[in-house]
Image: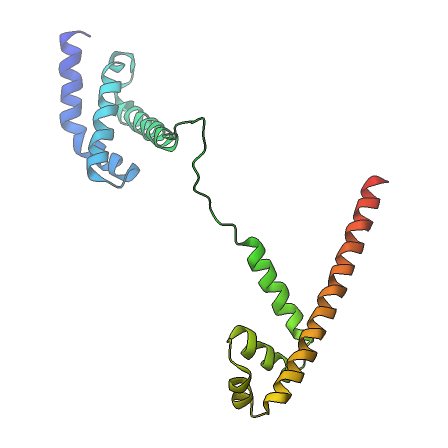
Length: 179
């Protein structure tokens, strides 16, 4: 690069630095990163300065260099993982089944009469004793036991019926796919 072109680039940077820094600040939130982005873009542009025929487009050229540089940085940060022969032991619990079971149970509970549902909720979810449940619902301990017994039997029946339906649907699906 000739001496005159160096001065031209330096003059350009002195006059446009504030505007270019504002552009960099729009691309990255951190002020220090914005300054680094601008400096990197200026270094890259300096090497190509003589190739910019219309210097009036230098701002647009520099902004494009800043956008490309920011994209490179983003991609580089994203790929900081290092492949390894052995996976770490840390596992993430998948609670999908637990949520599905809970949703199924909530749906199945709808088949119970309100009194049965109250007994099941107090005894099993609230973990109250038979006597506490009886006192909370204003019934005898014997009534709580018999109501709970009938409610659990009804829940089992409903779950078995739904399981049979699910198996039949799976069988039909397999047969349909095989045909």
